[in-house]
Image (tube, rainbow, N blue to C red):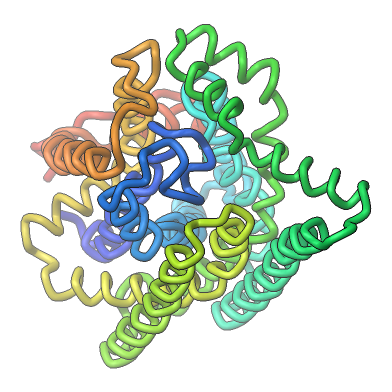
Length: 416
């Protein structure tokens, strides 16, 4: 292993943990109607095991893994810029060529495979954060945190508007236009039996039917989803850039700071998510309340818990740096692009009608078993592949397209 590879195993392993954790959350979006993230009653029977599985996902995984991935995207951008400068390349050209092809991959991922793509969002967000590359680590951290907190307040206020409308519509003698706006809001959430039945029938259909629905009814969705860029993705990427420059994300910060952030961040964030889960159960997962919890109230403790996770994972990676499991997780992180898209192919084959057609037929606990199966696949294939090849298969294709020529793939054992 080269010095450069050794130096950045922390980033690789963090990325590996993140791509594995993202699948834990995404599996519900693969196998259940879109709004299932907000309630265990949507798409499944709402049994005790379904509620428990939802709670585990919400408390420990939801949003945190995506946040770690966003932090690492910002850190990786800085790393790529550094390497381009060292090799005499033009950083802007390297960066934007990579993002152009990432956007193409993202759009293909969305229209051909799965509506939950984040690659296009990351490509557009990455184009913006390049403008801040020259800022100091401290300035990037401050700006990222302030932007994230400001956006969170706006999200909370926006979600509270739903509660306000619900309350107004429920008052005796409520104005007809208020009631009409409330009913429109509920209808647009897509939680009526008819909407859920139509969504289920669609994803149990053929590949062509699903693709045509994307091209007709969801054509602009990847572009409409860009609203998330200034609210979450860009602030987190900026924070990741700053934490990379400071040495925090590469494991070069004082151990005691990692311990403090890890313990307090995870504890405070976890208690907040546990309290919201208790409220959700107590209110029987009332949907407007759940939209406030999942889209508004959870944003602030999510950042706190994410930082706690990052600190604890860095401590884990530093302590067990040479352990075979950490090495395999790091390899999964080096091939994160292949593993991310590979999980889409695997899961859509399991759930969609062009594959085995189990959409809406598998409970949440059994979905966790599918996640564990693909985790095993990630850990089993990534390291052996990267012992022989320089890049994961899709990493190689992405790099080749961005560089405008096929990249050397095989590792020359004689030169090692």
